[in-house]
Image 1 (cartoon, rainbow, N blue to C red):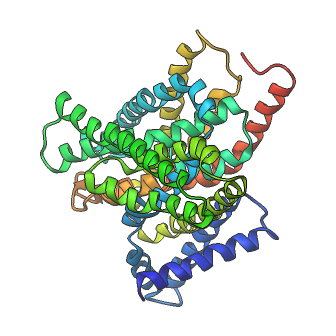
Image 2 (cartoon, one colour):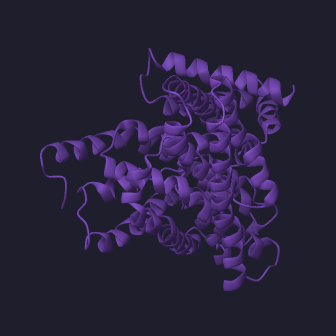
Image 3 (cartoon, rainbow, N blue to C red):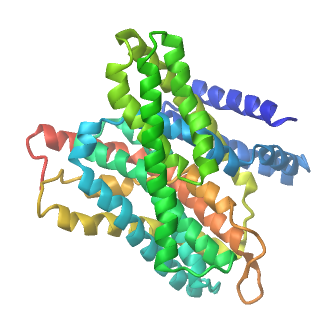
Length: 429
């Protein structure tokens, strides 16, 4: 079966689960799709081990035809981040620029070091010692919050604006920082490269700063072209060129396509929307990108649930898998709480800010895609009983599922309390 046919059937499956969810589970759509896909994966695993031998292998081959990592990192990521950028309120983002900058840069570094140090210690507890360089590798891929998961779940719950902007802004920008860190540690761990301050800064400048500049130029060019036409269909088609040709060009140039899409989306959503589009075209813009965003999110979260079929489970590593969830949450809490000790010296915040930023720091497809890119063959343990790639993939998958299903389903009361505190006149602490 071709990749196109596979995606067609998977999309139909995701939409069917979303439709059934309206009448049965009635929970947030992306959570329902992930849960439904996970249940299907478990069902196929059981059938494959009992009455239908070979079903699991066949299902794995079908999922592999999609190539989850490439499909996300080199495909739909551009669409999802561009759609997220379109919905960002730039004046509100500017009001939180320092908080977001600190959380994006220093938050990722702090969380990476906490997670790496904790995993290194836990490896000895579980009798599977892990070299520290691989602990750092795991820390870099799991520390950045996933903008797709955050925008799909947290944004729709209507958190107070101050908190919402921090959550959205951080998640949209920190994947670029996390990806640069991951690529640097990856090169040291597997390519034998030496990590120096100069090489890290050169990579950061080329990827992150280059992506921001390219995104600004792309957004400006799109703004000029849209402003030069009154054809509503042509205006929408031009926006479609940004996450397609624009995202592809960013990857060809070696700059961060993710950051480029966010910047271009912010420019078009906050400038071109009001000066280049007619009032009717603005509605078409919102409806078109909302529909496309919903469709691609449904497909992505279905693939996250089905990715369980790609994970090789090792019973020796279960203690690390179970402890990785609280470890990453602890790293997230420290990376948020420490900056807030400084933030509160100059500004007041909602008393639920740290809790919502910690519990709302969701992980998703980006972390899985990076975990899948780790090469197999590095053996851990005294007898080499566990493969490094399998271990990291197991821990990442457990964290992603916990993040989307448990954190995504339980953050609503926290956000409601924050909104109630603000309405009652006690928004700060």
